[in-house]
Length: 296
Image (cartoon, rainbow, N blue to C red; front, top):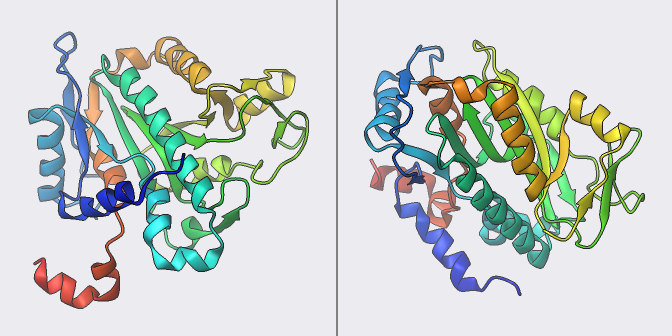
């Protein structure tokens, strides 16, 4: 059942909240966390870094953003009407991001060194704005969009949620594309390999390690993990559903020694928070100068 306009209106009203939208996880006393600031990025002011540190340390916040924010914006921003978006499919896609976010928030609950950020667009100019209409999802996809980001020290885990058709088997083809019941379909060539490159570029100055997953958000699909799946998983990304996403997150948490990371790199978190997609504000879009004066 499509979301009602009331939910879209409620999403639009988020513009009056803080620029950083977040939730607080339960306080975990089992691991003492260090908060490290390296002043690596000239565009991050000391005042801004201190504010992020306060959110992390004093308020114990581990979750930022709003799942599906970019897709909800496509439903209310007039510019997307001319691009041929499919409202019903966009709503389903947003629902998929919300479901994956719930899984991830549950996963980080007992991991105080892990930060989760939903709905990011990397501000890298034309390179990150490339993309177009995805007929399968009915939405406009751009290379700079990331649905979910986990930060663990200097390790990044990027996750792209796909609310693809249910009751189907998904596998990996020879060229790294996703196949449904062994067949090609629109949108079956995820941009996540390019996203890995963009994230590394975004963090120039810090040697970040990037893991990537494409997560099928509905529970009634299965993944065929054959030799091509493992080859692609080693090289670019792993194709998972929500259940196997948790399995592989647990695996790298334990086997890659991420569980022993006892610090949060504030610069890394602060840099990512800059890219959180804010709710569309029609007054800001139509009257930017006037809006800026009113909100000084």
